[in-house]
Each structure stands twice: as C-alpha cells, then as structure tokens.
Image 1 (spheres, rainbow, N blue to C red):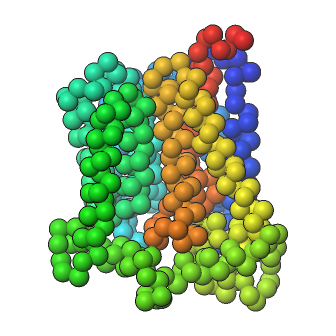
Image 2 (spheres, rainbow, N blue to C red; image 1 turned 30 degrees about the vertical axis):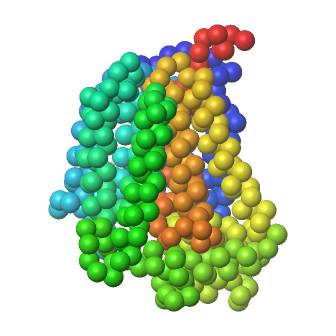
Length: 376
C-alpha cells in the first residue's frame, strides 16, 4: 500500500505551481465574495494535505478496486435524482446530507480517469478490438448520460474530451482516430445547426432553454443583449484592467465587479476578477501556471512505469487544460457561456478537493518513474 520512495522523485515544481494558483484564487475570491474566502482557504489546506497523503499511496494497489470506483461513481451520480439531490438555478447537480453539500460530477471526472487507467491497462493488448472499444463506449456513456441529464452540459463535454484522450493514449489506432474525426466534426456542425432551428427537433428538444439562449447570445450578442450581458461585462472588466490592473479590492466606481454587473464572479468568472484587479500581468501568470501544470502532467505521463500511470497523469493534464480553455474562453467571450470552474482558482470545494486528489495520484506516478530514469 505504502512504499519507500526516493525524495528526489517528488515533483516539488508541480506542487508549487498548484499552491501558487490556489493562493491567487483565495485572494481573488476574497475580493469577489469575502464571506467565502475562509472556506476556500480551509479547502486548499485540506486539499494539499490529502494530495500529499495520496502521493505516498501506491496507485497500483488502489486501482485493484477499479470496478468498485466505477459502481460507486454511478451510485453517486444517480443519487442526485433521489431525495438526497439538491437543485439550484434549474439544475440538479448536488447531493445534500445535513449541512454537507457536494457535486458528484466533479468527483466523477477523477474516478473515471482512475477506472479507465486500470481497465485499459488490463486490455491494452486488445484495445483495437471491437469488443474492447464497444465496452469502453458503454462504460463511458452511462455516467455521461447521468451527468448530461442533471443538466450539466459543460462537464459532459469535458468528460468526452478526457475519454477521447484516454483512448488515444491507450493505443487506439491512428486510422480509427482519423475515421472518428471525419465523422465527428461534420456531425457536431450539423447538431449545432439543428439546435438553432426555430422548429422543434430531436436536438433542441433535449437542450434546456437557457442552453439554447447561451448559444444564440454567443452567435449574435447584439441581437440578444439581455442574454450576452454577462460575458460582455466580463470582457469590459478584463480590458479595463489594462497592464497592471486596478488594484486588489479597489474602490473604483468604474469597476464592473464593484457594480455587481457579474454574477458568479467567485466561480465561473473568477478570471474576470483577476483581469480587472491584477491586469494583463495577473492573467498571464495564471495562464502560464495552468499551462505549466498541464505540461508537467504530460511529462510525468511520458515517464510513467506502466500504462495506468500514463493514463492517470495524462488524464489529469487534459482535465486541467480543457477546463482552463473553456473557463477562460467563456470569460473572454471566445466560447458560449457555460459553467466550469477554473482549476485551483475558482471557488467550489468539491472541484478543488477532487482536483487535488487527482494530482495526488499524479505525484505518486512521478514517484514511481521507470527504474532506468530514477537511477540517473
């Protein structure tokens, strides 16, 4: 279960990048919603402690329970639709037990990475067979439907991105990848066009009104100012920060944040707060740190001792990269409005703790690098 590791294999650089981002996030949350700052600090502290504990926990031992992880994950996702589920703003994504409230879809991303790490390693010699590929598709579609039905379109998109990367890393042939892309790209374009049709069809009937409205606001913000105002205000706030920002917790009347023109500024639009108060320099620092974390995970994946370790590290790298791209894309109006936290920065204890747990496994993968490299 626990092993003796060489301390020189501990990735202090990765830990420092994560902690630095979390500190920036705590400051930004303290400005966006001061009442939540202490909770975020406690969450970061608990997350770091749990991450360091898991870093010394042999992931190979825990992955033996991969089917238990999968079934437990389905149980948590299904519980959202029971009496334990709690809804907010038209979505039922949380489980509430007493004063304890958490979001299972955030945990699901980590558990599915761990599950497929072991599953693909077990069948890596047969990864290109119809039976294994079909099994993987079935195994991902069940939790995906549960997440999409909450509804949680943004998390379901991230889940697909992670799954595709896991299958690619697992050894799916390039011919199959090319074939899937040739089918997927035009299919997405067709589905997107169908979603915007005025008459009801299979696609737009399965999307919530607010999801369709966000797409419309993204395509033509001038015609839908009431729907696009949040992202337009976000862009205004980031631009107003210029190079050095307006200052932390500034009292300027021209501040978009101070005027309460942004909702959920502590979560979905935390990057906007950073841009307005810390300027272009603060934005670049956050982006560089997030890119650095993702690339470091990929580097660890390349040197992992086995396929499971490779998938764990690469899966976490893709998760951080995908959520970063979508969150910042929304804040800068490059993408339609969709709610996703910025890793290590946004408020959200379930997301924060889940990401730190995943990174704990990445650090353990780094501890167990290939023997020929660890003796250099």
